[in-house]
Image (cartoon, rainbow, N blue to C red; front, side, top):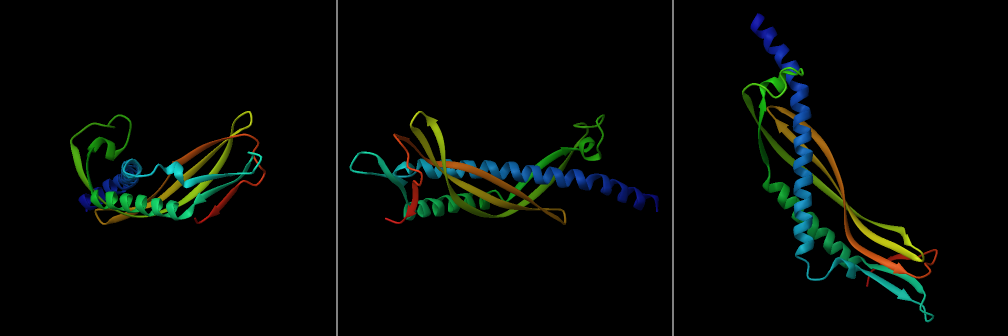
Amino acid sequence: MILILAAFWVNSRLEPVVEDLTANEARARAVQVISAAVEESLAGQDQPAASMVDIQYKETGEIASLSTDMAEMNSLKASLLADVQEELGESVHIDLGVPIGTLLGGGLLHGRGPEVPLRITLSGNIEADFESEFTSAGINQTQHIVNLRIRTTIYTFLAGKQGSAEVETTVPVAETVIVGEVPQMMASLQSK
């Protein structure tokens, strides 16, 4: 009877620590995978991402509009998402060793004792959307940035428990500095 109560007590102490540890490790791995996949995908492009943005001028030389090539943007998004999903699929298991003192809690035992092996299994889904951002870059200069906001939900499975962790990161994919007077309504999204 005492062993059963002791087992429940230890389990109640371990469960929150293991859940937090699992969620943090899943977030860290997801950010690492997303960053590596995006870097690899952008480096492997034939055309620079800045070619997605086209500035149209009036006859007077003033800026008339700014347009983006939606077909190219969607192609980039699909490529990035496929790369991220592939990378996430390859890192299905994470093996950790956590000192037993950390699992039991308390400052005195933290980081001490033999390591308890944990294997975390990951699964996830990914979404992405483009955002267009205009900011002042100086006198008569405006910076236009096209960002890809990537959101993923990582599901973790550990010893009969499951949890999830949300990860969101923004990656700039194109940047343009527009010199001259900027019209009030400047961005239009259209297919070429």
